[in-house]
Length: 366
Image (cartoon, rainbow, N blue to C red):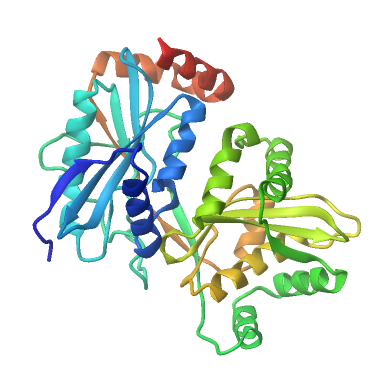
């Protein structure tokens, strides 16, 4: 049952307000890392501006929707990568939050508002995702992305943790769900003497993230640079919102996994490894030790998120995850003529991501 509620825009300049929202995301099984205020703020490096509308009742946050705007008053895009977020039992708030986001986007004279609801039609034992996509009764939503390049939450690769009285018993139960090659690879890394530690300071975070950044360049997919994401990573680590697990061999950093602690799970959203001869299976081991750390912190499970390139996908599926596909994004067309122009150039803008980032920063200042 939904209690009487009020909607208001969160003030990002108010640390206490930001902390309340972030704590809600950490404690609720519905929490999503891309809705953390630290993550929303990270778009400032792209020239974006974060906004957040929250629903409260009885002095408690029950839900909210975080939005990023890009551009200036002539060409402003609004995007929610995963939302609205509502606590279990508060599903009736989704509609009002969507309406509030639409009204806000219209007041901001946005060209479009795109929303990726964290919902699935797949059976889900836990309640991490909404059971269906909700529709606004006031605004005319259209299915599909507003334009290429606006990424959102597409799926979960969910690994639930078994109950166990010891790490040895937990490991044995986890291994039962892994493929034989994954079990073999984990033993190879263990025998090779690979050690996995959680990065504790800025220097360790930067050393680990450098592996992720280099891996992105080598694989040909966009990865934020340290200059763009380093401040966010350090702040999240300081606040206990996210962690970077680093794999080392004889003191050399060879791999890393970054993830957040929202939704009572560890969301593994970025990783990278260096090639070694002989192959010490660094990628497998750093992920498994991150799983162990998550279990030791009382998390319900581990989300491997996106499939990734073929080799990464094969490695991820060796851990035996359940794939949960999210519903497609929806968008609101608020300025048809300008929207048509944006779509015309959308594919070109996607191919020239760095140019778009620099252009967005200049547009915001104009």
